[in-house]
Image (cartoon, rainbow, N blue to C red; front, side):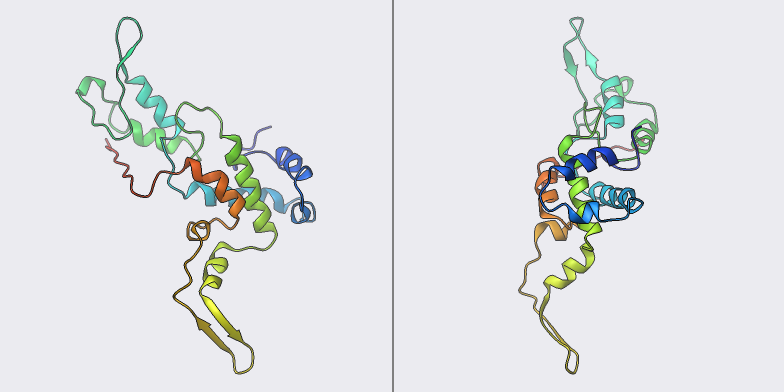
Length: 195
């Protein structure tokens, strides 16, 4: 059975951690907490800004491509392209409905399943969450330059530049490396026409 509440499966995660060095937090955790950690990891991943469109939206775009008699694409509505003629535009609300129909950000484009790298990133983030890492606390801790217990003193430094993965809410750098190739560049703009 495939669980649609998170990327990957419990069985695949168990196999992944059987071959991973230092897998203690996964196997030492309560089995009931593992799906919760995978769900939380999926939520973290789904907040990021990815290239391309959700598969459900891609299918709507594909439905309205203009082909010649040989099946060659003459007009394919690109990610940020305006519809050229009304007869090739999807019905009002079709893109919004397609966006809402797919629970998670993956699969994207013509893919029909989430990439293996995204599943591995989900497992890595779940591992970190089960190990007690909190993305918010990790980010806040980067600004602390000195702490004391005697007369309770904490000094913050504004010179510490937060690490890219923590800024984006990902508590695991290995997961960030797996996710990074799928992300839209920060200077790219994604335009959508909502019908």
